[in-house]
Structure formats: structure tokens, C-alpha cells
Image (cartoon, rainbow, N blue to C red; front, side, top):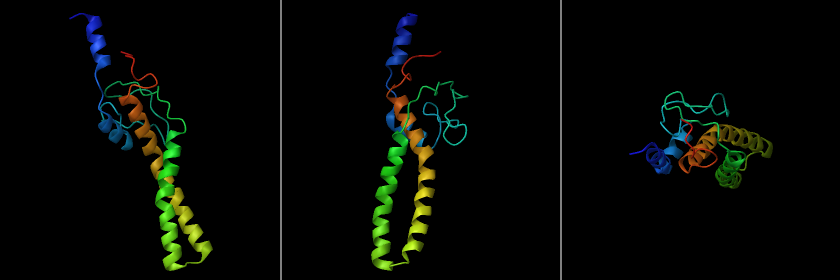
Length: 134
């Protein structure tokens, strides 16, 4: 088997989407799942120290922020309605508590959504993840 055939086959192999998304959600390398994907809160490392997969080609942009807004909005809107209808708290108290809850949930979800988006891009070979850098 020639080098060209081996390189072609390694690029042609399908990458599993669900494990890559799950690893990304857990903020781990989508390729091996052994090391953290982030250096800090949202900064993706250049390469995984274990599998040497290049991760700096991702283009998550605003996708994770849109996903976080969608999720937080769908979780908090019914909660706001239920609390207001059944408990009738002081509006300022309700706004304060639910604002803190929205910010906390958003800060928790943002790196996880970014990791998931990077995992999807890696699995689908988008934005440079398809070419071999080795």
C-alpha cells in the first residue's frame, strides 16, 4: 500500500459525531478526550498534548453564544412565568434573583457550548480539521 493511499484513507475515515460533541461539552479534546481543550475560560489550545490534534483551526465565532441564549431563554421564561403566577414575589426581588440565575447559567454553559461546537467542527472536518497536519 502506497503512502498516498494511506493518507487518503486516514482523511476519508468518518469521525463519530456524538462522542466528539460529548467530549467537547465536557471541554475535552474531541479527538482523544484525554486533555482539556481550553487554556483559560474560552481560549482553545493550539494542539492537544496527548494526540497532537491541531485545534486552533476552529471557527466557533458567535455560535456558542446563540446556543446559550436559546437554552437559557427556554429554561428561564417558563420559570419566570411559574414564579410570578404562583408566588407573586416583589418584582425587584424576582428580577434580582432571576438575573443572577441567568448570568450564572450563561457563564456555566458558554465554554461547554463552545467545546461542543468545536467538537462538531472536528467531527465534520470543517474549517481546516480535515487536512492532515502531521
